[in-house]
Length: 445
Ligand SMILES: [Zn+2]
Image (cartoon, rainbow, N blue to C red):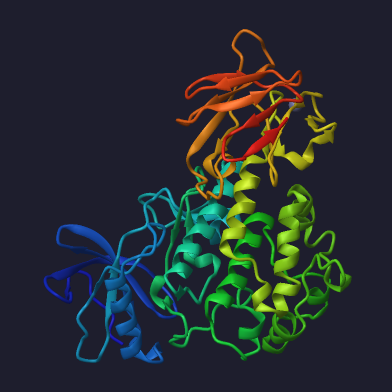
């Protein structure tokens, strides 16, 4: 396998050449170069030809993906193929990762390694999310990306922390390493990364597909939230090293979730797994339940794995469950005392009303937002803000709901009086009130 020389050029299919400017990184499959093509900079992934099991089929699959186009703007999708060289080597061009995105690997490590400018030395730079909202947004974006990919009838096949780049301020996402993505039923030799592979893939009885993607997706989400491997507890700790046989046992044949309610043999160990012990308590019960399902019945039965739509609903709910108290406390609602249908801050005793829909309970505080998926029937739009909660400028502590839609809502006060909330108008909220958003979406306070 010939490496490419800086300054040389490589022909791109359908015309022109890409000039090699420098090397960005290398891995087991090949080298990634910085190139310039038609006046724009790209990353070129150049393969070690002999490392590909079926190079021709692999290349055709990438070409098909280029022609099909990306299922979402969250993928760093292949854009152009290079012409094959005499020895068969080839590569593809993709966009560069913008500098505000950090690898999920670095986020999980809590630091990244950066070169000190003008020197050969490196330094550790801390990496962490700037808010709880950013963490939850990242989870939502990951779920949406895979929802779109799976809707296109394709699977990613190699989900692991190395493939995700995230803006820690916003939770914006880019999914990289898209070269193993293939239509359902196709696989070009990739099995996945240990720790992320579905148990049936570890056992060698299944190949990566949409169902195994769903398992790996749950692992990625678990690591993002809980900073730990879902199957690494006391049982795994006792087996001294993680060689292949142990991997097959703990991640394949005898995989046990660290918080399996019916099997306590693999609980996290205090002093060793403190991160996950602390974080497990931080998240509301509905989130913990989703992971319990993913890693108990979902381990054995691929059909019991959580589908992206359900994850989406759970994380959109979680995003609205972050209560910002005036005293500065920012936590999920389960860290507040829930009494008489209200949340009470344990630090300052501040009380919060909540807007109760059929299946979701939204805490009321200044700056809280309601999305179309809450206030419209059968809608999954979690981006459009249909209502904002604002504090009354004259009466401190009195919260109002502002109607950002074109519909008129009806509020029924505890005395039975009905008040309309016209588009753009705000109505003070009080306990005992109901809000009719139309089409029988009614919430109570
Ligand atoms: Zn407080």
